[in-house]
Length: 469
Image (tube, rainbow, N blue to C red):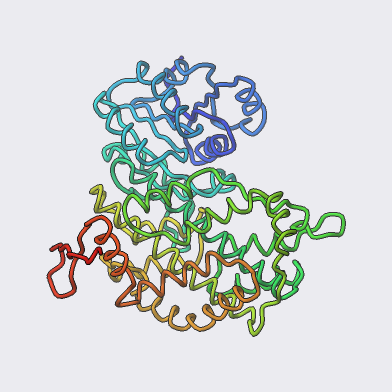
């Protein structure tokens, strides 16, 4: 076959197909392959008609039609499928060719693949794409990492399909070596879990705690979307709550059992491995797990009676404050996690640039991210986002209504795990002394694990001869 395609796309699921169309619209000639031939045929006979897209019936044919250095984008399920396709591709490629994994791969897998393919003379990029079907088709947020010398080859191509931020900058920039791109995408997804949970808690408080209907609640979210909570997720929440079917709210027809694909869990695991708490994301993940067994919840509601208490002395504006403050904490935790990983793995992550990448195209896109970007531009080495003047002021204003919402919810028996965990974390982080001294004493008592003293330099450890009689 004649060498004529600029890039090959393997995998024509929702994301792969739409990225192929986006690439073609941006002026690239695209070759596509899917392991199920009928999927390729349907794509070529449908959306790809009259596009600069060519089909391949085998990996060999795909590789043969690509310009050198070959650029191949994998849009397939994470895990073993990626390793299998890479194993099949390697014998067909030449030194300098580039494999790009655009799925939600675990960052340690990406780091391993980057290293092993570099040893073979190939270049590898682990790229986080966010924005779902719409983003893939019309402009996603793109977070590339992996082999640094591969970035120069694909930079213009990727920036040409990325979403544009309000200032016109493409939401695509080099993140860092190895697994950095997929790590940042993982944290993005973890934060997304948190954003969805704090919105869901606001909905529940208004629905069960204030006896408001879905339409009325949707109007509240629409109003919030015009203010500091302006974001894609708030916008679609308002739209969802306005939807009906058969004259009844659509939201009431959906089973309250939330699914998940794993990136939220990975974020929590990484935070534990790096000793950097992401308490709100953790609670968001566990809230989905709690929701996933409605039969057990129904049984327990019958045993203990379902909490149906009205929250008192709480206004919807108080809930907005609790949501906003919890959101600040979640992002502060996420950026601390990325900062810790950057130091641990030598990635040299640019926090302002990461915030900039998330301003458009992705699921968590929001006006809020511009505030984060500006905070890190002003202070690149900022240790904690809550110390930035903008967010410090916002938290000080939110403390009273935030605490009031949590207290009223607990009193009414309405679960607010995200709001409560964020507030508890905030209270803990601003406490000069915590009861951890007792925990260390207990550890030393039963296991001689030693402890540091307040009257001695950090890093020096002591054991006390406890009276064990």
